[in-house]
Amino acid sequence: MERTLSSQTPEKKGESVRVEGWVDSRRDHGKIIFLDIRDREGMVQVVFTPQAEAAYAAVQEVRPEWVVAIEGVVQERPASMKNPDSASGEVEISAEHLRVYSQSLTPPFPLNTDGYEIGEEHRLKYRYLDLRRKRLQKNLRIRSASLQFIRNYLSKEGFVEIETPILTKSTPEGARDFVVPSRLYPGTFYALPQSPQQYKQLLQIAGHERYFQVVRCFRDEDPRADRQPEFTQLDIEMSFTNQEEILSLLESLYIALAQNLFGEKHIQQIPFPRIPYKEAMEKWGTDKPDLRKNKNDPDELAFAFITDFPAFEWKEQEKRWDAVHHPFTLTQTNDMEEIKKDPGSVLAYQYDLALNGYEVAGGSLRIYDPEFLTQVLEFMGNKREDIEKQFGHLLSAFQYGAPPHGGIASGLDRLFAVLLCEPSIRETMAFPKTGDSRDLMMDSPSEISEEQLNELSLSVKKQENHDA
Image (cartoon, rainbow, N blue to C red; front, side):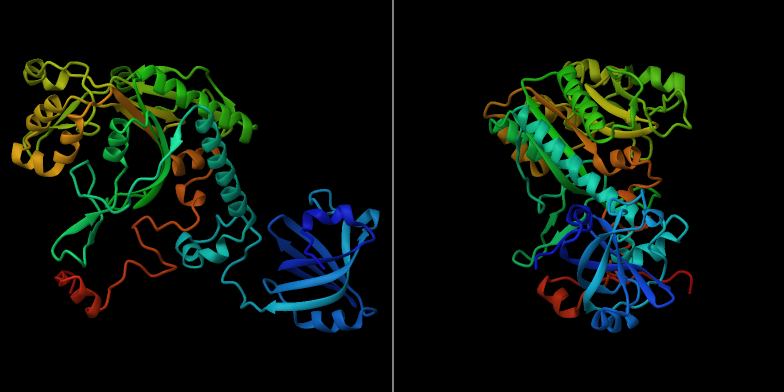
């Protein structure tokens, strides 16, 4: 007998079916025993009576979270017993056979609540159980549907999804890199990408004028409450484009996403406001203002593009100018003498997308002239030999016909947290780390064996315990 999902049972009244799943709850009413069986589509109620002797005997020891298969006949519930809040609430299954696939220990916390009342570290230690709760199942399903919608939308707009490497080269791009030692080339290291920045620019030189990717990114940053060492972003790059075309593309994509998959949401203003950085800082004191008229309404979406960021900022500790965004950002002047005269006043073709007080996307037009890029990197304190060592591959590529190009990257975990009204990006991810970058379920980061260290030609320098 083929499996029937819980949501399909109302269509099968009077038929024999086989349901499989987890025991969500058990209720004993005198001699009658009720089990709620949970599968990926929801739940269905199963009734066990002494008349079905084998099934009735088998169910005596069954407890919540056991995994079972049940065969029986679908029947309509009495009118007073129907549950309008459940897709299968008008029917139940009269059990005839029960098979236990596996038993379960008593879970360390309840799974039939939204989970907010449980300590997060406790939840993350048993994340495989936490993910069984209805709220997180819904979050991951909506996330999946959203990613599919984004892929389909961009494909129809002529974009090609291209994967870029995870093992790459360590270059200075803002945050610290996670590095991976090479066994075959002792003493050398790969880096995990902070973003596919250089690869997506190289793809423009390669003639792939409309690229996108849903990509994992990695940044070795100090612990912060709502940051993750690895995260997912929507990466978009275009050739022969301009700032407004890029902003309009993302705007139309997110309007369509909200209207198709988050119909309860209301976008406060279309088209999204374009606000210069200087104006945002003067009016709201932040470059990601919350522009909702009613900030107590979580279904109100106030998008706004922040534009015209400063190109450079002074690093007092290092006594040098650095890029506000990244060194490949195109300045609104290409006169190097003008830049050197007053670096703080130079603006960039840089833009962010703010949503309800959060930055959910950021991007820029890119420098594509290799000589100008070299001059900018030198201005920021890099020696020419270091520039060649770190960026020589990119500068070389630019000499083979680089088109004007630009793009934008959107932090999807944060976007989904806002759209799903979640307090943290961790509630939209399957297996997140804690706020201090630990995986409590897998117990990582963890030490590796001496044998592995030897294979990698590495030794570990133990830090002194200053608390001892």
